[in-house]
Image: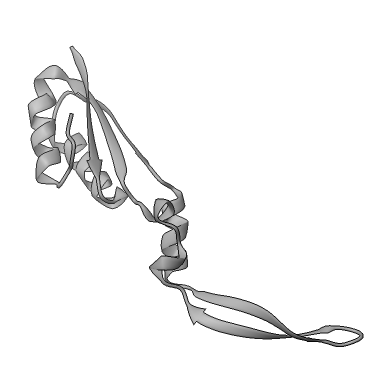
Length: 114
């Protein structure tokens, strides 16, 4: 009988390591997949960047004069749903392998194993 096991990880890198270990060490695993918030990758890149704020200072007859303020980006700039790297993992395997899959997931730090 075929069974699907699901679990959650804090980061996609941990989920990838767990899926690789399961595929390599447990027989009877048909497929593995993961779902995570892909916007978190962009947010992680922006976190180490710099913010530039352009402020208009004076208006002349032909153009605008502006000033630029440079500041380092912090975690507070990115809203919380975009920072979340929670990853859901789905493993389809034989029912005889469910306990082995669950034990590997548990040892790799998975949460909410079902």
